[in-house]
Image (tube, rainbow over all chains, first blue to last red; front, side, top):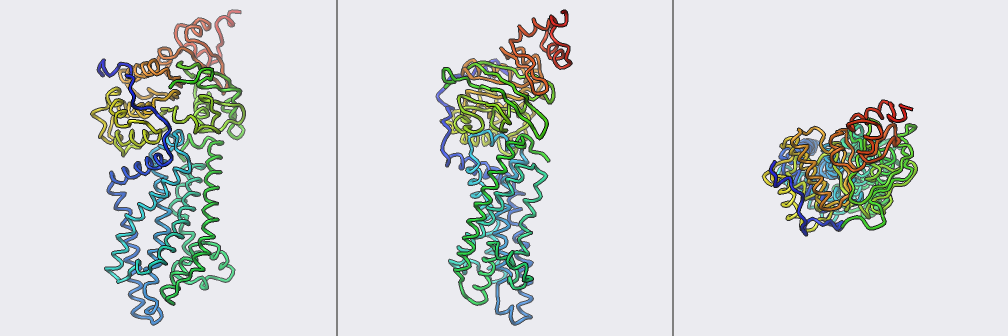
Length: 283
Length: 254
């Protein structure tokens, strides 16, 4: 160390902290995640790898069935469509949760909780980053689906916008709640981030109509917003009918689910402050 | 901007923090003067980290009140968080990001003006200029500590909370960090609360020492008065007396 570097800091005009705006803080967090993604090719590869494998596997299965069964030949694209929409739901939640987990893995959450960043700003940044991660992972796969199987997801038009918006709302609601659980309970709850969406897979009837479920389970399925999306997708691909009523029902349920997720997160954060969990981010 | 006149930078009143049934902090009170450096001493489990976490707003008190720069913590924390900062071995800045990226992100979070100049300035002051574009994870322990210190100073905090700021550093780097902290506090009139197990560090930096044991304040005075009262030559000996319950020398004589 030199004598010069040991001297007291000089007074300068730079560095005064004014607290900044909400948008600036959200921007800071997005920049942080972008730096991270940019610096790590395995993270980028991971975004594309699994959706591609899924789509190709189900695409070939669909192709096989379609050439051997009349009904499925008419219902072209329901499997690939379901895979791609499922991926929006799953990857949306995972994108949100993984960005949050990055803070836990890097032991940075204490720094953030002590900074002027508000919890809702952190959530907003995580929501935007889940969109960014989804775009990197899912958009190339949708083009592969066109190339490999002639299935054009974008051909769904406005319906796709409605499907996408509803699925993202659900994925964020679940991601927000799971993040709260991890804040409160530490990394012992990490597995939920990876597995919770698979509970939704059979119940939201991704690959089959709701009527396939036992009668007693059908009300449970109809209580989950993604069920309406997957039913809507089948109606569009098989009956060529856009079911706006299903999308509105999904939206109404999503508003409730999102509010519940947000409320749960804030309550869990409050509980984490009470129990001192924010200082202990291990198991 | 230093603390407002008449408002103590940190005021802790009858603070109690109980985890389930275990009291971590048991009714402590103290007030820090503007521009002062105060040491918080105590063995493991004495309640130092909980006290600091409550001051930072990371935990809510079971009862009692903590105010920082006039804002009640954690309820009004967003009024003052941009004027505070901290460094602790329990948290790290993201290791994959370069030093400059980390300082940029934290500078933006704290709403620092002229951020580029501030980063360049910190780089110069903390001897980090050549390291600014290297990933933080590839730095040595001493260099990482300087990065954490740069993060803690990015917003020119009026209140700085330091938990073991020189833990795991070699004596030269530790001494360098202390010199820089001293300089910063003198220059900015910042108020510092320092938790440390390094008695020499506390003796050198702090004009006041609060000794905690089992969640309570056992003693609170200037280092010189503590040495005189316990009849000891070093703070380490005083600390051992308190930790082992040997008591004050004059009391023992009686």
